[in-house]
Length: 327
Length: 299
Image (cartoon, rainbow over all chains, first blue to last red; front, side, top):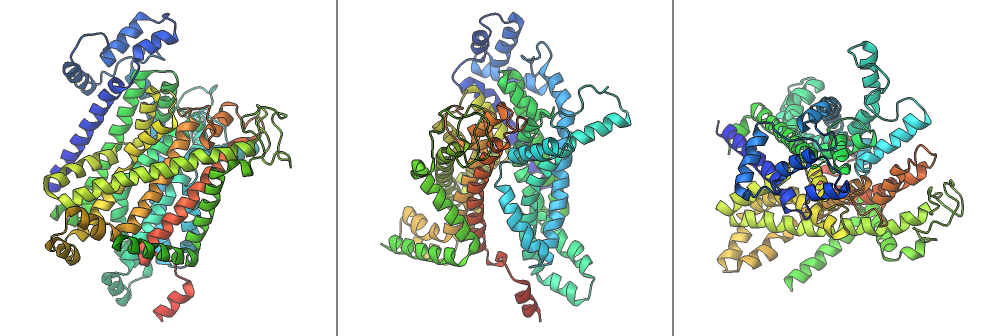
């Protein structure tokens, strides 16, 4: 119970820090978003857009920093994220809701898949110490982890899409297709997702393999595993139900810690494939100087990561009684 | 004096380790060659990297080892000259964020109490806020990020993981007898920290430096690739930016886009190999075993 309170407390502190950071960054940075918009369009900019910008960033409204801070917090908590400048006058939240399902589908599924497959491979590699998996996987993934994520994407575009022509080069679906829940359209979406998903999988799996392998090596040396062997239990049962379960726990914590890193990679993968998710939208917003959209996306991605970390903390507590009793 | 002699001992051990460990040897050799290129690019690069003087868009040949760009620049020369920025980013960010990690992690562990609680909380919060979106937002306001600005942003976002690890390690050492003995002798806190506490943590600190350096290389390349770096400087990330913006892959110049990625990976692998090797020093259980030796041990 105490553990739960601590974790909820930490989640709230982290959320508050993210909100405050999001408020402070535009105000601490040199330059004024509204002025730069005016300069960019030589004054020919929709007055309503400038107004929206002024409200969002507290420019020219003679409000004290403190009161605009509370107004910002209030607005954000109520989901009023302002209007997008590049899709003016569509609200930022609508633009985000359009992009969200793509990212959840692509990044969510491939990250979880990478975690499950990587953990399983790492466990097996450590179990057969010095075997084929154990000697091949670690060096291969050390080298892969040194490649920039997006570069693996570029390579697979070049090889699988341009050279072999097996997959589409970019986008989330064929532009000309009709958007319905038909089999052919869903198939089209899946077909477009193969290369980006493969890229995220390949670049994220190595970390899980290596940490799981290292945890397993420590756990396999424990007495209770020896005991299980002595009892003559089937090796498969010892691997998954004795050693694997315990070795998994640090990996689960590691999952939370490296989630931010996976998201970073995913942003660039979406950019390489022009995949219509949050990461691609974020970089588009940067290019279009759409500050309200950019800020809200940063906030949303941060909140998503924090909530995921919280969930994995709770999962760790449920699976591991030690976290509940200590601390 | 004691510090110097322990440093000498550490160097001797390191050189012995590099000779014995294949991963460490490979990593050191690659890093040495890259440092040489960083220091003397003109020894290796045949041409001025930005001169647009050749037939645009030619493939592999003896005069252009990796072909030319669609502006008529020599890709190989760009790659050589671009080495400097990536290596410098790796070393400088690695060094500065390690200093920050050691400072914060050890202060937290050594002080304990409220100081520890506050520093740990800050560390954890910085750790969980996803860095790349944050860096994107910061650099978006500053427009093209200069070299030192990029260093600054990468350091303030990259120190937390190391600080956390070092704090845990320092906590486990804090109540060892030899530390208590030093305190009982009346040594100052500085002496205890620098002479007694830090030396046993050397391998972890080095591993930390290597992973921060790797983080910096990959993050910087990502930022430059999406055009948030200074696009007019010579670096591997900006090469990727220009290649992507001119659709190098579609117009049949894959080397332009793929070569800088391989270069980044070569630097990254060197750092990762050394890191892995240092992991094995810190935790002997992870050292590679041959299947034959294992069988013998089991028999």
